[in-house]
Amino acid sequence: MKSTPAETKLFAEYLYANRTKNRFDPEIFEQNRAKVFAAYNDEGIKGFVPVRNSYVVESLAMQPDLSPITEAKILQAFQHMIVNKAAENNIHDANFCSFDQTVLDIARNYGWKDVIVPTVNLKFSELGSK
Image (cartoon, rainbow, N blue to C red; front, top):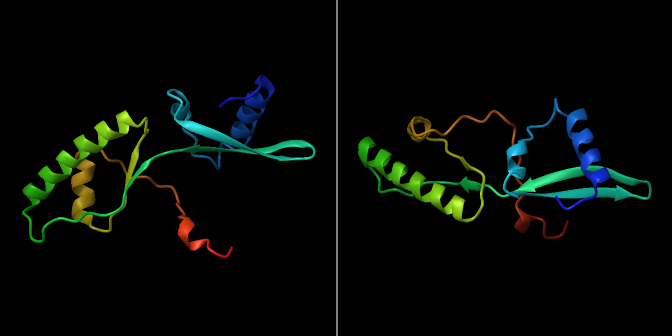
C-alpha cells in the first residue's frame, strides 16, 4: 500500500474497528500481494478495500468412471502445479469450488481447508447495462 503514514494508521484503525466483520489476513501484505483502494468524499477517506488475487478452482473435467486412486493422483499432481504457478505469480492462496463430496474429501486430505465465509460473486460480463 503506497500511502502516507496517516493513511496507513487510519487503515489500521478502520480494520480494528471492524474486526468482528472482517476476515482480514495481514499475511497478504508480507510479499506485496494486495492493493488497497480508498473511498473518499469532500471530508477525506471514508473507507478502504484491500484487494488481492487468488486462484479459484472452478470445476474438474476428468474422464468419467476413474478409480478413486487415479482421481486422487490427478488432484495431487494438480495441486503441485497450482502451488508452483501461484508462487511464480505471487498468489497467496486458492479456493476450490465443488459440489462433489468425494472430491472435497480428497482435497481435505491434501491440506485444503473448509472456509466458512459467506461469499458472493460478481460476473463482470453480466454488468452490461448497469
